[in-house]
Image (cartoon, rainbow, N blue to C red):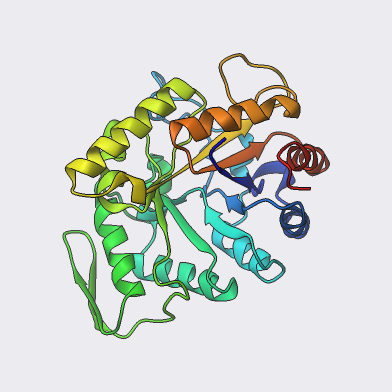
Length: 299
């Protein structure tokens, strides 16, 4: 099997969003030999049905959206008690934020972790969250937002002028510890894949169907080549919802002992890093990742 990194999603939303226990969980994830931890971003849970990408009818958002620990703040706490884990967001809805403020927060995380931050971002899709953020921007504004963040991470003086964002000539710090914080871009559409191929250091899929994932990765590589970029220099960091109940055709569904086959299949598709989101309570998560560490030879 080609080497594939394994990350674990910290359940920072819903009933298990206990900050102290999640920090302890991250310490255990590092002890078990995994490569990274990841946090999700949600601002609110609307009380009315919401239109979702790919869904024919509006739907109620899950109760877990009612309570979400801030993804970057939690990773800053994890940075203080870990030494090796990469710390990624999966994914921050960047267009709700000022690029200057978001870039400074990622740079602060990078300092606290001595250069282990990964900026997983997406454009956002939930209209009530855009309303709450006080801005409604088209998805392709993400390209400009990422460019503005990279300007902030670059040398002073920083200046940026775009259609949606502007930064007057300024000194802005801190600068990241890393030469460049990796930017992964999530997507919900083919246009999102093309955008990631143009602007990102990697694609961040959340797919439960390996055939569709393979198609997405192929499309990502084609668009990267068309943009004059080398696809082999770009990462594919894919997130998956894992369950112990069998579900034919879905990866990480069934006994943990069968997950090695899924990792092999992902490596064959060209996935560089699999982020596994384990269903259930924190004690159950620890049991699952302990077994996963054993079968993958990490402990």
